[in-house]
Image 1 (cartoon, rainbow, N blue to C red):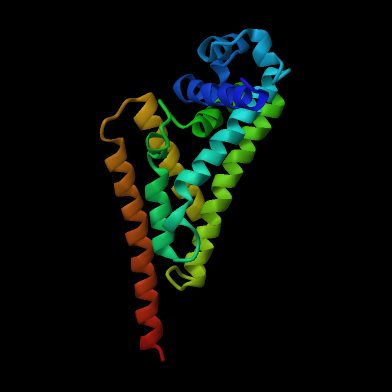
Image 2 (cartoon, rainbow, N blue to C red; image 1 turned 180 degrees about the horizontal axis):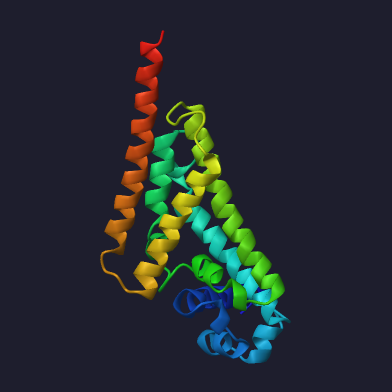
Length: 208
């Protein structure tokens, strides 16, 4: 195999292992065994285990972006785009072909146990998620689908909480009803902000 093909294979195997077991459980040996390579073959591409783990997070973030932000889930449609994104985000790992849980969410859970550079990479991935929510919420505000005084950071925090709660319920607690509960929470948030916006609009018209 060429060097690039081998590197891609290592990262894919590492991504699957991170999905199944979490970043903390990844070793050169576990990746090498799954990829049918020697430890030296893995080390040749990733001299330090932290390099491998950070690269796995990069691949996971790219896969999340392609799965959740492609097509109609992007910015531009206001609140409908935000809701489409949330629905695409919940359970995205299955659609992306990963064998277990979300590697990024699992890394966030493991933050306290990850070495410095890997912890920083996981925190940076969480920041990308948060900023994506903030961008979509602000777009909904610009489209006047949400109130101008909507607390953007709080709403992003609430929605990120829905996702992380789904992650724990679905993969750690094995709750078969986790998808439905998460979707119900998304609908509840949507209904709440829409009702508030409609009430404010009616009040504004009545005061003219």
